[in-house]
Length: 145
Image (cartoon, rainbow, N blue to C red; front, side, top):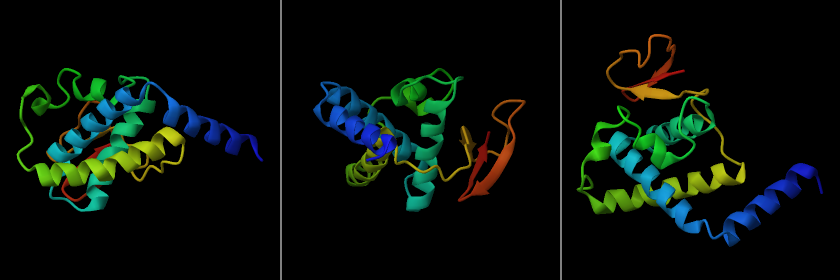
C-alpha cells in the first residue's frame, strides 16, 4: 500500500469518526447556501465551478480557512448577512446533497479543480482586485485569479 493511499484511508477514518462532524455539517450548509445564492438555476458544471472557487480560496493564504469564514468575510457576499434567504427549499436540498459530495471529496483529497485555480468569480466583468487576471468566462460568470 502506498503512503498516499495510507494517508487517504487514515484521513477518511478521522473524518468519519471525528467529533468535528458538527463543524463539517455547518461548513456543508454554508457551501450549499453559497451555491444556492450564486448558481441556482445553472447547470451542474456551473454549480461545481462555484464550489471549486471556494475550495481554491480555502487553499489560498489571502482567505479564511473555513467556508463559513469566507462567506461571512466583509464585502464578499452581500446576501450573507440577510436572514431567510432560502426561498426554494427543494432546490436548496438538491444543491446541498450535491455539494456535500464535493465537500467530502475535497476533505478526502479526491477533489479535482475545474477552474484552473480561480479564487474569484462574478457576473459583472469587473476585476475583483486591481491585480486580478481573467482566466475564463463560463455560464455568465467571469473567473479570476
